[in-house]
Length: 399
Image (cartoon, rainbow, N blue to C red; front, side, top):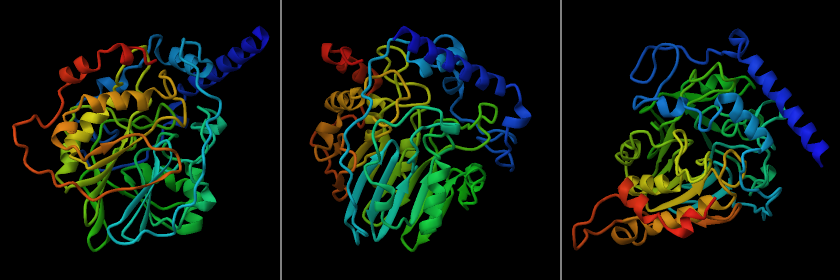
């Protein structure tokens, strides 16, 4: 057993050294994905968060980048054990869902199939076994909730940014060959997608792509970063999306930290949010941590839910690839606790934000028209309120 562990750590060390050596060859690794005029989030060479980048540049754990990579590869940081595999009952979605009816199926990680208005919409599709280059990276523990061959014909794909757990070139190539969907992404990611011969429409924050009368996609702000090779950091933009639809919009947060926390309200100004797809995983890199600079955790996801004024939210970005420290089922358990702390339970009792099973089709109700409250209530749960409410033995016991 000790010999196997020594071999595994030796292999991991070699991989780290190869990766670090590669970062000193920027001419090879740096890619110019986008050229355009400077803006409030682009300096002519790289994109940036207008609300600050310090929290996205800071390594989440001690020891810098090499120490973080070592612990990620070896698991040698006291992290709780994850299952090797998770049982998933795959399903076959309907070919189409017409009219105002809406059905959402969480396929895994940030991949969700949303069907409504006769459209089949897919977010950040990833079917790879590992979330990384050349077959390396975190291994999938849960197979996709819908097999690729059982996907209905896809009309629209949105791709939030170029990290390997969100931009899977192989599956985008298969989708393009099979369905010729419209692929919408943010600036520069069309270049990454185009490396495998797949065209994509790249838009800046605030720009809109018409799908058909009454249906469009708006690329919206969030708080993250982008890279495929370290040296190409922030050469392409990251984003969330609003799909504008009759009867209420879809909001897909992509991969995001909280930042200034104003971006959910910006998205809500585009119209009532019927369905929000919000990340709740990959937030803990030290014991007890509730959020990371680049990733909201469940408490912040609940705050985003409140600020969007969404009727229904589905938690994503957990339980598929191990990217951080928290236990396998900590995100949904912490989400349940955070929702009990939210003013939503009082001010909008019909609103729903709970975990769903992989592959389970969920019918999304119509948008909630919240009647005026009989008494004045805060519109959101403050950081202090959330922190105090979650300071319980049950929450502290979650690893």
